[in-house]
Length: 103
Image (cartoon, rainbow, N blue to C red; front, side, top):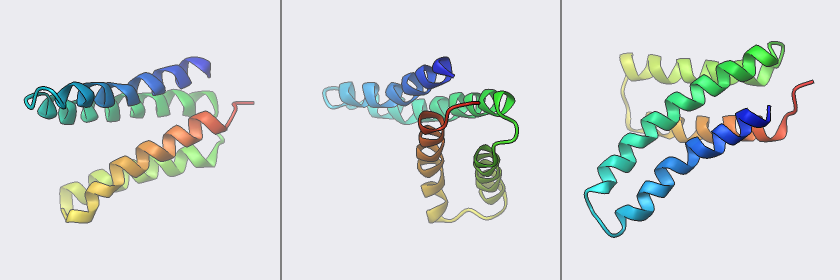
């Protein structure tokens, strides 16, 4: 569980770290935006690992439902508000990982 927490912190730090350098070099803003996709992929992998360690946790199933909903809406019905979901899912998973201990 500690490894999952540490990897989550690293995944969240990547875009923030690049964004700090983007303040001095404008070209890095694009790299910071692209790194958010990497963060999302890492978080999905961490969620799968978390789910393997605690398969009866309903909260992780809600996370996967949210991820599925995001991609279905992205594929079938793109609106402006859909871009709120990835940051919300990121926050939700981070809170889940850092507040719930696997029993």
